[in-house]
Length: 420
Image (cartoon, rainbow, N blue to C red; front, side, top):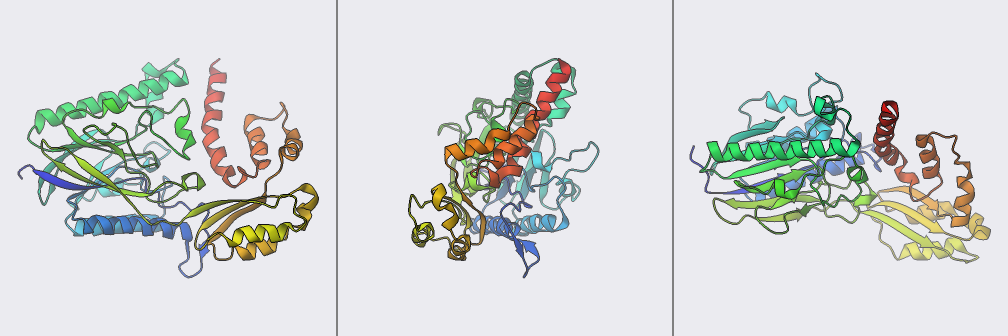
């Protein structure tokens, strides 16, 4: 097949089917409402991509939330891919960190697609260059999947190094792989349009709620290592906030962002995908297409010193539209009037919300300090963190998420102490 002269691309990533945080059981379908939200967002993205007559879909990793997705999650993702393939839109699919199993030898979450040869899906489980046939000609896709940290740590080059030095080692490994992929594209397919897909963190990326991406063990790959010839576009996954990291220069280095909100930390972010126009030896243009997703509302109410705190809080709620939203409410009230707050009346005022995940009083600093007196040096770091989170109403709804993110740091601390 002749090389394509121009193409329209559908770039999406971080679908995370299986997220159920802040959802609830839907008795009509038997499914969690958040699974329904994410599935709806995925299908809405496919609808818009097909309406835009895209020629190739670039999926930049993380199809599922869990490494062992259940059949319902797999069915939802496969159904969306089937719609693309049946519309003559081939799919290039990258392996993300959420797609990789914890145990060596087990199949990764997307491996089944690699076994369906000729089904319109091309899988990138390792650094790889693949020509892909589209209805407008052949295009070259270079895939740089997520590197498994434990594989790098097992090598001699990582022995005796600090956390920061290991992160730098992995960063350089990414850069070297990308350079090799670029050289292969230039050497073997000089007349083709080439694009790069990657799933990792680029330096200076704004990560929103994903605080775990800011820890010292997370490799930070410079955008300059990706924005190299012959790539006309760099399609990234892993960071949930949509953004471009080559400062408007060519080629664009773009995170499409996730297709739906994972938590309240993403409540102000647009969620969606990217449409890209690429042409040989011409400027690449792109546009982030925002999807209509369920709103996350974080409400701060203040009863002040009112001796009728419930009425004061209800008056504030009346001015807010919470219809079909996922809502978290914090309210402030003086200690002497706290017992007068009628929680059931507040819940009734929030009845049009899809889910109220928290309705809590925010403690003044003095009260919070008293509650934190149980934190002592005799506690382990993890238990101390858990107790601290429980003493902070702002943090309590995210307790499990914060503890999970912190466990990687606790494990690294234990490893360093053992090595000392």
